[in-house]
Image 1 (spheres, rainbow, N blue to C red):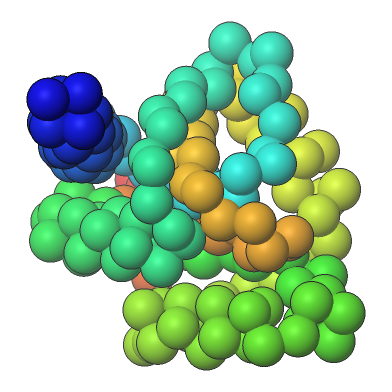
Image 2 (spheres, helix red, strand yellow):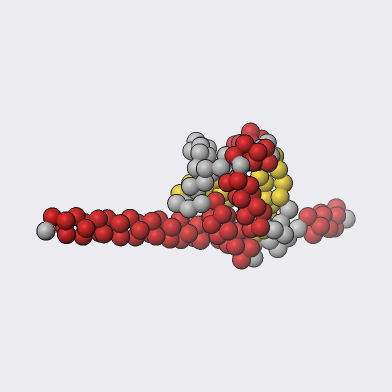
Length: 182
C-alpha cells in the first residue's frame, strides 16, 4: 500500500511540474504578445542569457521565459516580423565569437542556430560593455523589454533595437528636404 501511495504521489508531482512549466511558457509568450503592439521605433527588446543582470533603470522591464535562447529568439523575431509597425535592428556581443573557442560545441551550435533564426537580417556586433552604456542612455527615455532565458552560454544575448516598419531613412530625408524648401 505504501509503495502505491508513493507511486501516485510521484506521478502527481511530475504531472504538476510539467503543467507548471507549460503554464510558465504560455505566460511569457502571452505577456510578450500583449506588449509587442505597444512597442515602437526606438524601443528595445533584449533576449538574454540567464546571467544577464537585473538593472535599476526605470525603463527596463523583465519577463522570464523558462526556455532556451533559440526558442525564445525565434518567437520574438517571428512576432516582430509579423508586426507591420516595427522592424528589427539586431546587435550581438562581439565576444561571442571568442567564447566559442572556450565553450566549444554548445556555443558553436547556439551560434549556428541563432544565425539561422536571424537569416536575412543584418547583425551588428558591439562589445558587451558598450551595449550596457547604450541601454543605460536609452532606458531613460524609451522602454527596454528584457526577456530572460535559461541559456548558459556567455555573451549569447541578442539585442534588438526597434525601427519604424513603415517609414525609412530615405523617406525621412526626402521629407526634411521638402520642408526646407517651404
